[in-house]
Image 1 (cartoon, rainbow, N blue to C red):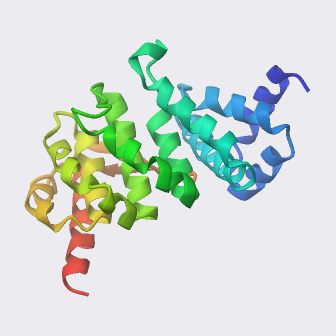
Image 2 (image 1 turned 45 degrees about the vertical axis):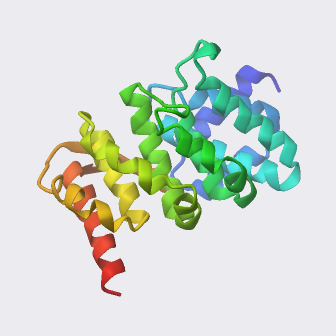
Length: 231
């Protein structure tokens, strides 16, 4: 089956509403060709297709890691390279896809969570472009939801609060969401300052996109912090 045909079928499958049914169909196709198609999908303009490509790529790389860890490492290193200035690209969708891989596979998370955190740090592999920061904040939130203890160990709560002061409301809202998952009570006042904002954000979670607001994400983060303080 030619790569072009696989790509066309992969993109058609990603339109399906039943996530597991889509994944079963993707697994029936040649894995290298599917991975290549999904890589191209994570930077597409079509919003839902792009996000579902991120989810599917993360799942398939996690499955690859369970069978052949070194092959999965090669994929993650490709993510890292694509965010490097020397790659010549921008790295659309890469922080999100990398985070999805780490959320789904503990071994990859242990090896590469510190890299995801380093993308927040100016003395690390700092991502300066605001749209990439949006993806990074979503990715940190995704990993914080799945593996909060690991991100706390990697000191993510030390670097996230700066993003609450971003000029980009999407970055701010997603940073607040991540801090809520990380139980970062020291950021409670800064998160509360965002809670009145009505700026619209389109949040992807579990195969669907939901319209929310910056303030809603801040209020949900505060609720998580309060539940931690008052079990």
